[in-house]
Amino acid sequence: RAYRKSMMNSHRNGQSGNAFWIILLAIALLVAMTITVTRSTESTQDTGRRDRNRIMASDILRQGKSLQQAVQQLSQRGVAENQMNFDNDIVAGYANTRCGNAALNTDDLPCGLFKAEGLGLAYKIPPAEWLDGTQSAKSLYGEWYFYANACIADVGTGGAGCNATDSSTELIVALPWITEGLCIEINRQAGVANLASPVRPPVLSGSAYPAALTKFTGTFAADSEITTAGGEFAGHQAGCFQGLAGSEPDGGYHFYQVLIAR
Image (cartoon, rainbow, N blue to C red; front, side, top):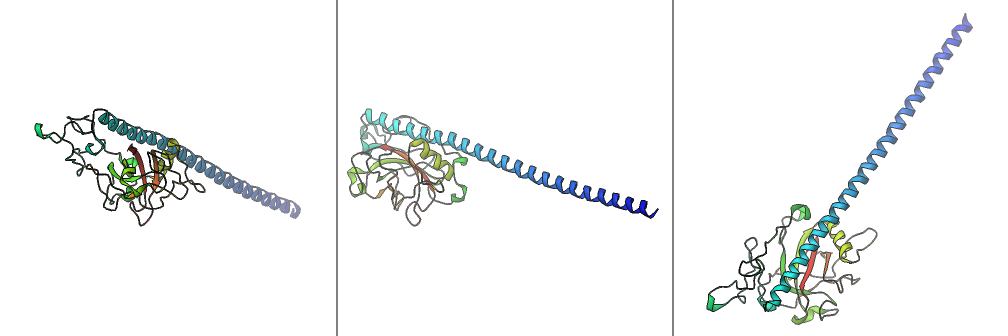
């Protein structure tokens, strides 16, 4: 009888031990499954973000190219460089008094991209998803910036140090304060080399915007240069850079498109 009782206890202990290991195995399998699902979800999200950035980068580059072509159309109509008028009903500060005809008492004929008397293009407000919301308090946030105070080496006639003369200054449109991922993708599509380890946009060596954030109203001025230590933007009429802290723009990520190379 004692022997039988001992065997029964041993059997119960064995069952308890087996149950314990089964529980541990189930927990381990559950943890492994959770990790796998989490990684798969993160990978899917990353892929989705990259795909979305590709689409948005294409949209931005397309809009930049459309603005460049519009300026070329005005030029073919006989509009001079300093007559180009970006005045619009959305963002103030672009009225160009050089664009006009005193005899007809108008300041819009026929130089304006966004005026019915000119090309009559619609000024397209940048979608919020293009922008870095943490920079929303910064100047020029959420708007296209037309200016003529900077140059890019090997675009037009200027080489390195092209900001030394007004004649080498380009007419540029910029989209400030976009997201980093979008900036990286713009460079990939524009053929501009990003920095590596980790992948990130090139950082300016100095200022790309004039200190006063001057908007184009007909005047070209030697002031700034879109350039980096590695020369990633040399020869590129479109790309995206990270602003240098302490210079204009002060950090953030910025798309640019040359409208007139000089």
